[in-house]
Image (cartoon, rainbow, N blue to C red):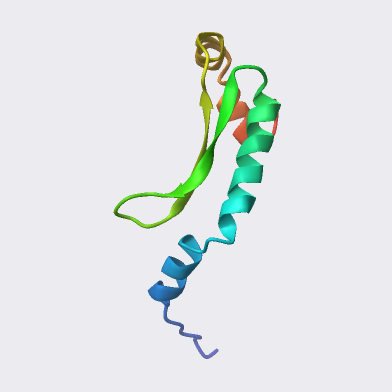
Length: 85
């Protein structure tokens, strides 16, 4: 019978990774690329640490009314996340 490998998650390591300031530029670049792929009216919001959970988060939003309608009709942001625009 094969030996089982056991390991223990180091939660402090996950927390340190989620809060690492070196990740902010990477997240910002990904958000900018997604906003550009989505088209006119979509904006990237900068990475910032969220309250309570302590993790960096960047966002792409439909900032204009036309982009909001486009996203509602065509699911543009979902398509961009999946890799197709």
